[in-house]
Structures are given as C-alpha cells and as structure tokens.
Amino acid sequence: MKPYSDRRAALIAQMQAKGGGVAIIPTAPEVMRNRDADYPYRHDSYFYYLSGFTEPEAVIVLVAGAKNQTILFCREKNMEREIWDGFRYGPDVARTTFGFDAAYPIEALDTELPKLMANAPALFYALGSDNKLDTQVQGWLQSVRGQARAGVTPPNAAYDIHVLLDEMRLIKDANEIDIMQRSADIAAAAHRRAMRIARPGLREYHLEAEILHEFRNNGSQFPAYGSIVATGANACVLHYRASDAELKDGDLVLIDAGCELDSYASDITRTFPANGKFSGPQKELYEIVLASQDAAFAETRPGKRFMDGHDAAVKVLAQGMLDTGLLDRNKVGSLDDVIASRAYSQFYMHRTGHWLGMDVHDVGEYRDAAPNGADKPWRTLQPGMVLTVEPGIYVRPAEGVPEKYWNIGIRIEDDALVTASGSHILSAAAPKSVADIEALMKD
Image (cartoon, rainbow, N blue to C red):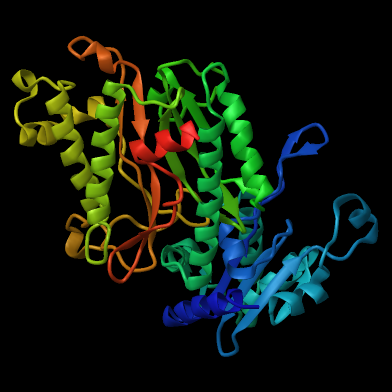
C-alpha cells in the first residue's frame, strides 16, 4: 500500500547501510480519561507514517538482512469486541491490505521477537519512548543472550530509529503536501467563519465552537492542538487556554487554531478587531507584524538557513518598536543595539517558526551537522520542508510603554512549503491584510 510500503523500503535501505538489523516501531497506547472513558484514540505518528494503520495495540517490525522483511503485529479478529469497539482488521487481512510480508497477533511478540533478534547485527529502536515496550525489549535481549552457548548472539549495536525517521519525515512528498494543503484550507475556512461571526458580547468559547464546527464539518478528524481564542489582554498570553472571556468593543481577538486531516496538521493564527474595525494603535502594530512576516517569507527559500526568516522578522519588529516608542531609543540605543541586547524580547519573545507535518511541532533537526565539535549551523532549507512563519507583538502594561498600546496582542501565522523557487503559503486562504479582514467582517 503506497506510499507506506515505499517508506518501509527506504527505511530498510538505511538500516542496511548501517549493517542491517531489526527495527521495532510501536503505535501509541490507548489512554484512560477517567473511569470507563478513554481519551479519543490517536495513533503514533512514526507508526502511521510507515503503515497507514490506525488501530491501537500494534507494532511494526522491520528486518534488514539477507532477506528483508516487513512484519505487522496487531489485534486478532474478535467479533464480540467489534460489537462494542468497532471493526478490527486482524493479522491476515491487515497483512494484505497494508502490504506487509507477514502479520501476527500482538500476543505473539514475546515469541517472535527473540527469534528475529537472534544474530541480528543491530537493534533500531527508540529507547525511552514506551516504558512497557522497553521492558519487553530488555526481556527479548536477555532471551537471546541466554542462547550464547548455542552460538546465538544478540544485536551488538543500537540505533535510535527516530533519528532515521525524522530525516525522512522532514521532507514531504506530493501526497503529504496535498493533504497538508487541504488541512490548511479547512483551517483557513474556520478562521474566516470566526471572523464573520465575531462581535462584541460573544465569548471566546463561542468562536471556538464555530472553529471546531468548521473543522469537523469538512472532514477533519481532530484539532491539531488545543485552539487558542484570546480577546483583549488574553492575547498577550502565548498559550492562553481559558476561552471564556467576553469580546469587548475596541478589543482585538487572537485565534491560533489548526486542524488535523488524515494525520497531518495545519497551524494558523489570525488577529482581528472584535467590532470589525482596527483602531489607530491596533492597525499601527498590526502592520508592523505583517511587514515582519513578509520579510520572513522572503528568506523562506532553498539555500537559506532556518533562522534567516526569524532574523529578518526581528529586524522589522525591532525597528517598529523603536518607531512607535514601545522601546525608548534613549534607553536601548540603535536598531543594532536592540537586536544585540535582545531588548525586543519584552514584546516578542518566541521564535518565528517551527517544522510542521504529522505533528504540529513536527520532527526534524533545526541545525545541520558540524565537524570536530564545532557549533552546528542552522538547518539549510530544502524543497519539501514545511514550516510555520509566525511573528508577533505582545504589549503588557509597563512603565515607559505608551498606554495606547497596552494589552494589544498580535500574532500572524501561516504555513509555508519550501519549493524549488521559493515558498508557497498553504494557508493563504485565511485573510490577513487590514483591508481584507475589515471587508470580511463588514460583509
């Protein structure tokens, strides 16, 4: 089943390059919420990336050796449990449906893994990611070591399988990009819906409800993360969660919300006036943030470093802080001084972006390798990478800060795909210019 079988083959090739061995990749466990109620189940991203299989209690085992093998361990068919919990593939049907060479009941792990690990050159496993499985792996190793007098040897090397998979997941293929575009389109529609419905007197949770409705109504299985709907001073809290404050005339509303579609996330933030019209100070700061995002987009292209966009955004934001008087030139000095001292961090304290993919803060190193213990340079951008671009300004009341800007929190966040010639904004359907936002809210 493509593209999953192709990914398994690519991973086995990397294992062969390291001398071969056995890889173990489990899915996520079910988690009890309280009493007899579970949290909604969500499979492990690494596991799904290699399988497309969404049932709990499953493990992938890959063998890179004289004969390569792809093996799935999963739950057996159980008609009684299916009455309560829904359809199960069972090993036989799962093997053919998902393109594995073999499949066994999950209960067979303790029997089969020692056989597969015997005489394997290396073990590819993310130690510490699953305590229960860690214990099982130790038991399987002990079982193999117990056969030493028969000439059987355990793996003599260990590799973190996540390191190999992280590099694979960092570069998205055409199928992944298509899903991420659809995820961003759904999320953008949700932001438009929230802008249309917003008005003074509603509460933050009313807008959150509209967002969640749009997500689910368009096929998204989950929010990609806990949505942030923050009005007024709440927008200056980066990870605000309460979502019960009233929208007031003259306040801004910041919404950071993205959906998950077929295991891929979108991540969009928009800031708009509750009454549909930016005030002078709000518009002034908003235009600075928007210009800083444009500066970051210009640096989001192949050959640029991951932090180039952040540095470009900071330069625009810092200059804006000086121009508006958020930062007093007599105290903080020139633009270069502000950047060197990080005085801008009073109003902008986070990085301008992160990787995006199956996880909203997706996997992948942010720095390239460096020889001889030298400082690692920031990662060079390549086509197929997807990252967020999300500058902001957050003004809390403070001595020396012009009062007209107090409690204004602004963030503008988009999802950018690095292409051969530059970048493509997946989330462009969410309006963000002052004119477009005001026109949408007026209509």
